[in-house]
Amino acid sequence: MLLASGEECPVQAFRLGENVYATQFHPELTHAGILTRIRIYRDNGYFAPDAWDQVVAAINASDVTEPVRILRAFSDRYRR
Image (tube, rainbow, N blue to C red; front, top):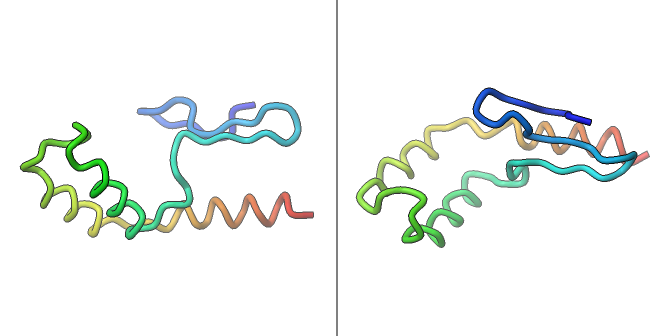
């Protein structure tokens, strides 16, 4: 069952059966987590090496509130 979709990624979250869930994003990441991840993968082709400052600025300027909201809602619904 498709649970979330978007224009650039048509399958963002889905469920198989009654209790197997998957996402195409990392809802657990915070600003610090994203910055750590891009620091680790900095030289692996995810962005041009000279774009580092712009990538960090874009991350720092973003509002990362929805992943926490999604995880909280999931937990509230299925912890029973």
